Image 1 (cartoon, rainbow, N blue to C red):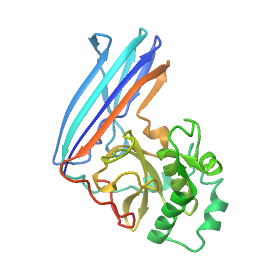
Image 2: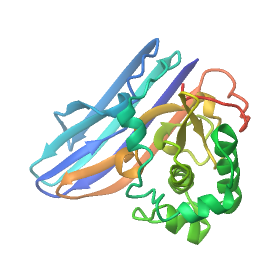
Image 3: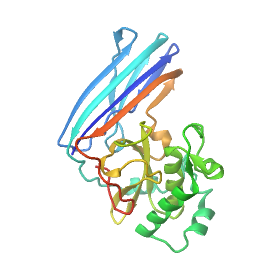
Image 4: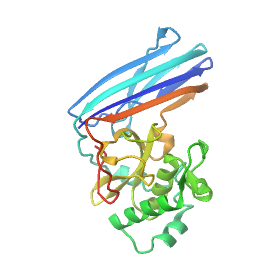
Length: 267
């Protein structure tokens, strides 16, 4: 399978701003990955560091002393599928705990009331279907500080809200679950996308309660507890204002046919 993805970000920074970008395809043992990266502040190239993140993710980090208008253009052509991932005992502990946007402790009564007696694959499928039924996808309907509880109360959200709620319900039932940021061919409207992964029967399986794109052609960017670990753009000092974002993701040939009941790992 060959997939071509790209992203373009334009933003302005204040003085003394440190920026971290998470837009690169994760390093997961593909047959080949060909990348082009342009990072400029005004008319000059910006020097950046590539930092290894968890689960193969890669971060572009840099600092700007002066106020700047910054342009990032990233493009990758990826051949093949990702190598299977093994998880450590530490991972499985980390991903069953509550986190900033996945308040599984607060949603424990809901999880036990809605999914009594369910385990394993049956639980995952039930959670996916329940979140898809209970939430309505509405672009721009949630704020960057909203977590799973707010999404459930509002009964609407964007992809990260669907993922946060699904992950929270699974963790409440003691299933390790995490959020992955992906490029998603076929997604409409096109953007960075967030999906959920659950550890069951010795593997990480991806599921997406939004149903907006086929899982088989998604490409992993970042992985973590929730959106705080997978943001495509963040500051670790100073501040910035995002002015433009464009994302593209296509697959060679026809898009895979999505079957929500099929067990799939991110490829």
